[in-house]
Structure formats: C-alpha cells, structure tokens
Amino acid sequence: MTVIRDGNVIKFQGQYRDADLHAPLACLHHAVNDYGYKDVVLDFSACTETYPGPMLALCSEVLRLRSEMVDAQLVLPDKPELARLFQNANWAHLLEPRAFDASRFRGHTQIPATQFTNPTEQYEAVNRIVNAILGGIPDIRRENFAALEWAVNELTDNVIVHSQSHVGGLVQVSSFKRTSKIVEFTIADSGLGIPATLRSGGDFAGSDTTALDRAIREGVTRDRSVGQGNGLYGSYQICCHSGGALQIESGHARLLYRPDPHGLEIRAQKVPVKGTLVIAKINFSDPDLLKDALKFSGKSHKPVDYIETKYEGDHDNIIHVALANEAQSFGSRVAGTPIHVKLHNLVQMCPGQPIEIDFSGVPLVSSSFADEVFGKLFVKLGPLEFMQRIRFKNMEQTVRMLIDKAISQRVSTGLGN
Ligand SMILES: Nc1ncnc2c1ncn2[C@@H]1O[C@H](COP(=O)(O)OP(=O)(O)OP(=O)(O)O)[C@@H](O)[C@H]1O
Ligand SMILES: [Mg+2]
Image (cartoon, rainbow, N blue to C red; front, side, top):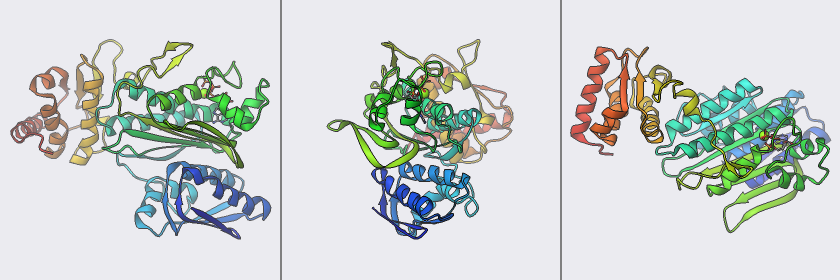
C-alpha cells in the first residue's frame, strides 16, 4: 500500500492491511503536529481493500484529534463495495459524522464498529456482540462461546479501566462467515497505551517491546489492587490454543502471534500507536481446542456466559427465550435465520435443558418466518428431540396454526438446501 500526504490531504492507494497501519498515523502526525493543520482530508478514493484493524486504529486517532478540535473529512473509496463497507462497518460515520450517518447495518455476519465510553456502553456493546455471534455462527460449542465472550469483555474492560482514553474505545467484530469459523474482533483506544500504564505501576521500567511481552504474561498488572493480570494473558491463551492469531499495537511496539511456523514476535516500531489496538482472531473449527485454554494459577476457569445470565432461570434448568426480544420483526425468513441458529445452538449447548419460547408480545408471525425458525428446526432435530426440548408458552391460536402448518409442510419437503 502507498499512503501519501500532500498538505492536509492523506491519500490511501491500494490495499490497507493490518501491517500497514502506521503509515497514515505518521501522516496525520506530520499534518497536525508539524504543519499545524486543523483539518485533514482522508482520501480513500484509490483504496482497493481494507480491514478492521487498520481502520479502527485510524478511526480511534481521528476521534482523539476531533476531541482536540482537529477536523477530518472523508472521501469514500471509488470501488462501490468498499464504499458500502465503509458505511456498513460504521467507519464512515466515525471518521466524518457530519457527512455520514451511523451504520444501520443489521445483518448477522458482522457487528459495525461501536464506540463505548463508560462501563454501561461497554456492557451493551459486549452483549450485542455475543448475541449476534449466538445467532450468526451455527454449531458453536458453549465453551468456545464462553471463551470468546470472556475475551471480548476483558479487552474492552481494559480500555475502560486502564487507557484513560478521552473518547473511550471502539470495538468491531467481523468475518464470521458461514464457511469459516474464525471470529475476528478488534478493539482500539487512543489512551495512554500499555507501556505507559505498566510503567506507571512503578515495578516496571523497560522498553515498549518488553512491556508488551510482559503484558501477556499471567499475573502482570500495573496495579494489584485494580487487576489480577488475567485479561491479556487469558485472551492470548485463547487465541493461541484455538489456532487463531493476536496482534497488539501500543506505543512503539507490535506484538504478533500467528500459528506455527511463525509463533510469537515482538518488534519495535518507529511510528507509535497512541493508545492500544488489539486484533484478536479466534478459530472455532476444532471444538475441543478451547476446552482448557482458560487457566489461572494452574486451575481451569469456567467463565459465566451470556447464556447463563440471559437465558438460564435461577430456579429451574429451563432456558427461557422471550421471542419478542429476539427480533424486530417476525415477518420474514431473513428475520428468522438468526433465531433459528440461536435456538439450534441453545439446544446443542445446553443438553438436557428444555427451551421454553415465550410468545408474549408476538401476536403474529409470517409463514416464512415460522418455517425458517420452527419448520427447519423440527426437521434438524427430529420430532422426538424437538418435542422433548422445545416448549411454547403464551402462544396465540393463529400463531399456533401457522407454526403447525409450517412444520407439516417442512416435514414433507425436507431440509432441501
Ligand atoms: N487498553 C489499555 N490501555 C492501557 N493499558 C492497558 C490496556 N490494556 C492493558 N493495559 C495494561 O496491561 C496490563 C495488563 O492487562 P491485563 O488485562 O492482562 O491485566 P489487568 O487489567 O491489570 O487485570 P485483570 O485483567 O485481571 O483485571 C494492565 O494492568 C495495564 O497496565
Ligand atoms: Mg484487564
């Protein structure tokens, strides 16, 4: 990739990948700090390819600059599908909110970049992410789901607890495709950075590269009264054990873990990342790999997960699903797909637990929705398992008839695909 600065215009040409993220940060620094520009133009017209990692590093820096009264203007890529990605992933809005609305992308294959500035927003962002994954990735194991939720939660928590970023953090989840089982999530902040906070503790005075090396070790924290030093260590373990990858950029250092034959590399960087960027890839293809990835002081750790907090009741072993909260519409196949995937995941993740679907507030569903969710689930599970595991509550007569009919029709045609 080439990044060229011409006055206050920064031009992106070709591919802008995970390894290229420093060049535009250097250009921004020159334009603003050396030449005193109060507005910059980010011209992506000739950009052909880009990824969440470098984009969030840039968005995060632009948010920081905006809080210091430096304005940015965005020129979208000429390539139509890339321009669409800029809007769907919410990058366009983060870079120039006056010109581009927040992403309304409601698909279930990625979660647009979301800004969080306090613990409530962080909690909501994490919930939105794990909910989308539960409805977006079929056949996910509960241990794997819990590990992913744990890591997203820890990495976003670090932004709130340590970074002192004035604009909070950004989190984006991408690339869960039907064919590959790698989930990539990216977290960026424009705060103090890992080396600086580790040094602030007083026990550490090494270089930025040593700081990153230390930060992923068990028990390394800037302050024992605040943390235990589990977050980065556990996230690193999850990424490694699963055959995924981890990239951390902070200050003048880059930590990169890739599966064999690469392994772990830590390098000094000329251009600093002001703040912290974490790109984590978790690979779910081998269901057993993550079983014992989370171990603290030698003991396996079973984190509380979204399924437990959202769906499991306190007094019974029933999984409670309030259908009204699961979708904005019950009229289409598209609206049904994530609910189907979620129910099927719940059936497999919680063996022996009945799933009770509460229809309160859902007076009507369309036949295609009923087929997508219940017809197909019936065929996948088979009649006995479906009837043992799935229960209905507060269902209107018409809805009952529609679902009944959808199931009978689906049984006669089979899953097809
Ligand atoms: N986003 C960040 N910004 C600045 N410093 C960070 C950030 N993330 C991590 N750190 C630094 O790295 C150290 C290690 O982080 P880690 O998450 O492993 O442990 P912790 O947050 O201190 O404890 P725990 O995660 O167990 O609550 C932190 O103490 C902090 O100094
Ligand atoms: Mg932490």
